[in-house]
Image 1 (tube, rainbow, N blue to C red):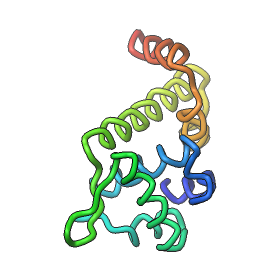
Image 2 (tube, rainbow, N blue to C red; image 1 turned 90 degrees about the vertical axis):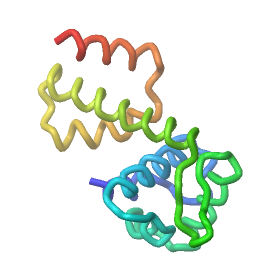
Image 3 (cartoon, rainbow, N blue to C red; image 1 turned 120 degrees about the vertical axis):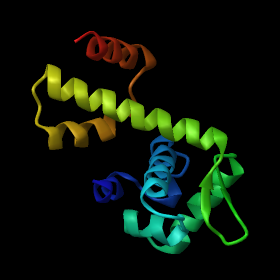
Image 4 (cartoon, helix red, strand yellow; image 1 turned 180 degrees about the horizontal axis):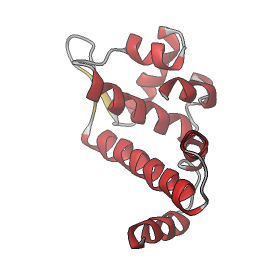
Length: 136
């Protein structure tokens, strides 16, 4: 699934894009759940980007206070980075469930579309979807 994200992330030049930032945070969170430690090379592999491109993107996220490196150059989310990553993951899950359960979209398509929608959906529409799913 993460391989798909590389197709929608536009790269370092687009790091001003909220979508790109959110995808980096989400991916770091997901990798940290699978790996003992996360390195820039692990992120580069997920997105099929050069390590230099990912390092530049991570530098931007460090400047924004969402990510930090330790002495070994392992990548970690800060408290704010964790909150943002969790928010994206929750939005993805709710939107995906809404598309699957309400509109009867197959899981693969629902997840792919949720991956795009999660970055642009308004709070009002998201909250309505979440309420609908919780009420089912």
